[in-house]
Image (cartoon, rainbow, N blue to C red; front, side, top):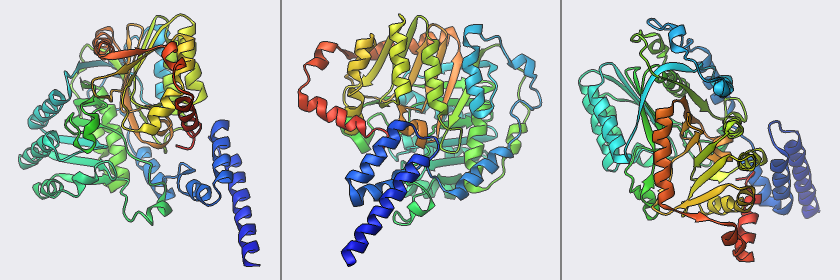
Length: 479
């Protein structure tokens, strides 16, 4: 009698979860099918997996705090010293819709008057950040997914302590999972003692109780640096050495970061303030009203910030729109490629209409699951005419896209479902031939250190290799 009741209850829970999967909004058919299979095929484990990982639930209180914080922020263009007419430059007609998509995500208009420099490498990037922190006059804001207490990590720690000592307001926030080593280190305590304001985004707390407050694997993956409302950095690098000691066997980690000056820093500032206020409750929106210098000549750019509390499907829409806009050349680098059907189709369509389409992956991935899933898409990409390269010189961590001769997208977002649906991400979209040429040159250096993948090579994979890749890819909507 007891076992009969148990199995009846188990069946009832399975049916209830399947109905919930079918009724849940913002879920593509492949995701629904994958979760139904998991729930039915793995009786107990499937139910537990769905309860823990099946829904993009960051917690109702956190959603309310986040949206409330964003709703109270002033319009970034309503700033003393800013003439909106001067900031809006003439984006070529064929690219205006890209920035319209970007505006639909965060409400940011594309702004002109920006200047940028592509950092030579990871160490040079950290040194540049330290120099800017040492020159800061009013405030320094940092947010990193991973901040390690290694050589580069400690350089930033010391720079923040120096800045705080001379009266600069320093705020630093890290993700509770990615930066747990730093949070529990002596350096975190030393910064707090030195007067640096610190916060932990999405803290883990008690791992057993954490799922009651929302999914434990929803993370703040952003990399944000804003100094005096005038300088910002954007790219893929965490605050760490390229040797990345927590995963040293994949080193060096190869990243790309741009240093920006101009009005685009104000949009990055708004992203940071939204995250900071939602986590700490501190009201610092007056920073968005500080006067800015008169606009100077420069290119047009726009911040794109996405996450589980932002409009669903925002980042994949941005990527897909870029792919369909390409007319001559499209070059992409990403360490993690687990697309939905629409994105895979957009990339294939780019090559089929005659666009020189290139995508660069790392040959060795720190996630064997993502690496296997990525390779399951190779055959269709190659058959469509996409050129695939696998980088050999470490783990290519750069997330970049260049389109024709004018458009660049750079930032933290990978081309996988985690970046599209679960993580908080930040990218910058820019229109400038010189910066795009610089990024294209960096991408060419990646290709020079890569090996091409051909249809013949994929055809020679063993059936066991194919089976593993395809079976892993089937779990993409779940992973």
